[in-house]
Length: 262
Length: 154
Ligand SMILES: Cc1cc2nc3c(=O)[nH]c(=O)nc-3n(C[C@H](O)[C@H](O)[C@H](O)COP(=O)(O)OP(=O)(O)OC[C@H]3O[C@@H](n4cnc5c(N)ncnc54)[C@H](O)[C@@H]3O)c2cc1C
Ligand code: FES
Ligand code: FES
Image (cartoon, rainbow over all chains, first blue to last red):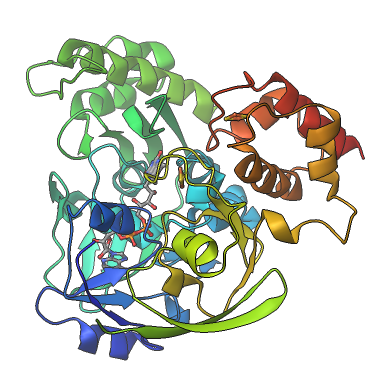
């Protein structure tokens, strides 16, 4: 690990003030500390957000579920209000990594990291959530811009995420057996704005499967989702799953997710 | 090298020291405090051998900085027994022969305790899934599952 200057601000204002140059925020460390150990990431200044109290917590209203950036996956998974309002979101959090990762990893860290196979991006895009930062609100559809890339500006801090409550939703992940990330994961939601289908693990970033959305808008059934054949040419391909296999998985998992929403 | 001061409680004992900010929690536990019951199996957050409890939450101590545990109460495998009396989970692993080489065992025990905290009566399937962050190269998991079942029944 390269050396760094460690800071542990007590307030959001102090955290933002510390964030100049190549400084990095530290949330759970489940991605960042690993990357720093391997010298794949380095930062002259590390800003530990764990003491900034108002970045944590869950609140549920009639319209949405708002979750603070520093809220850990386990807190979302075990939250009765989240499970009552958006069960698919609690399920998704419960399936991230393993219990130790969930006890440490956070929502904000997961989104800022934008791993192409991460789970939370599928919920954020699938539900059409809004990411609130220290300076603006970003629509889910505009947030993930590429492989490990987001619309966040240097030093921009994710404060919370507002997930609109859908009529129904579900997430199905085809897990990588060792890392437990998604080889492919599909989030299906019936929202006020229509059916949304978000796919993670299959391309360099999370995306909406618009062909499946159209099919499910005509008929919200597992068979309708399964019948859609997606092109494989821009799907990811690696030793774990080829592009054609991933394309097929998207339709299969979308259909299973539809069944699970019932 | 600049150092940062850290104070935390480990197995009930308050500790205060100056460390390199890069020190991982597992290095603090093993190298600075000499508590070598916490093992390092992979060093890449995969195997769970390094699992300890930080303020009652099981975490992989190879994957967080020691400074992230500042001000917390850390419990390692050495802190579970009360005098000569093993923690029920330790006793269950012993009774059920839930180990062979023992390398994964401290992490398994810490993780299994976390599992029962949220789900005191898990099914066999839930035990297997709940321990998915812990890898054992020896036992084939059968007796580990039995041990957790015994501890849950106790
Ligand atoms: C063994 C293992 C299995 C895993 N399995 C899964 C899985 O199945 N699915 C899944 O989705 N994820 C998985 N993960 C990743 C896990 O969810 C991470 O916790 C998460 O990606 C990063 O969250 P963190 O809080 O640890 O962030 P950190 O590692 O602390 O930070 C990650 C990045 O986000 C930035 N950041 C953090 N917080 C903010 C903020 N509030 N504003 C702006 N930037 C911020 C940091 O600067 C850093 O660049 C796994 C991880 C491990 C180790
Ligand atoms: S040594 Fe920490 S998870 Fe393997
Ligand atoms: S007993 Fe040897 S690794 Fe589990």
